Length: 537
Image (cartoon, rainbow, N blue to C red):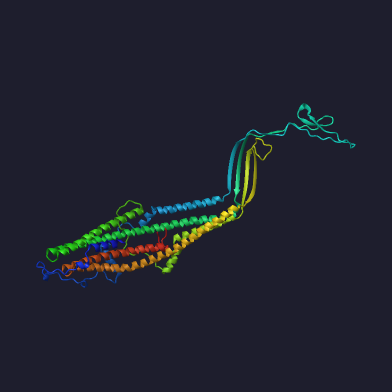
């Protein structure tokens, strides 16, 4: 319920019904002879405030009224631009969107790092237990040539080697044919190694790198657009909060002005009662109206305090009393508008939320392409260099630093990975369909926002002229009713009705102008014509 509805409801509840207030004009008394009474002033004999056919005159009459003077901007006062700027600087939701951009940028870095060649180094020391390779204590190998005449070869026998060391093959004369010393290899007990390894994902460069990079870039752009969209939303909400505060300011001005008039009428009625020209009931009726207006002022002050506190919380600053710094009686600047269907199409092309969702869909599509690369065999290149003491590539092992290297390619294929890839692709496709449906739902919501804001603005434009004319007429009607009442040609009910009409007309006049600012702001937001910086485009 709006502030004007609340205050008018309070007035209508507090004031007696019109039928109960109907009373005949007060009879002339001896203290106030009829011949000396002030002449009755008909409404048609007085000029109406402002020419009904002249909008400029109507606007001038409003600006000269207590309501217009109370809403006159002051230097250093609060404006919607100031509220938007301070709100953006202190908005947690905008900071959350900024964190999302940083997270997307980190994921992009992770994606690119995952495709870099893997280079690793490793160093180690190992203490080995004692061990040796023993080839025995000596051996003899020999052969005897047969005689030249083709006689049978002399037999070779095995016996003790000269010196008694091992067994040897002996010729028929008992001489060893070949003698070998004992052979034994000792393994070093301390092992040192330095290794460098390089792995290159060749197949990933061909199949996965491009779509993975594009997907991460799309995710980061989507996060950036979402941040900008949140900035526009924060600005819009801040301006609407400011306009809501202006409603409370205007309502308080209208009710306080009405109370001053009613208190003046109460003094007039009291004087008439003292003169015998009014009844006690007339005094009590006007006094009841004063009480109801005082109650409405308390409500209006509470509403203004709540609105000021909401502004302070929005801007993240201590609560205090603000002054008006923006001219709300003048219409906000707005470029010429095309047809409604063209506005909806424009909104679908400019709204940052929709563009962010579309970039998210692109990111998922690239993710599907990158995942499908896992259907194919994987090809990797590798290289390794080792500098070790002892180096296992050299035999026999000796405690000496030596270098060696190796390089090659490897082709691998895993059936389980193919099954997992198929499930991952199905998941990504489900995510994509969900985002597409969300985008369609958002398009319909944006269309409704544009339609609502467009017609609200048209209604506000029409209401401004009518409400300003009504305010001028109600002010003149109240003046005529007051003079007629003093002349005895009007009743207390006429005064109360005229007062209620003037309060209602004042609230409608300022509400129509604030409604125009609200509708224009919402239309700029709905059509995407508001930049993240707050400028119109």
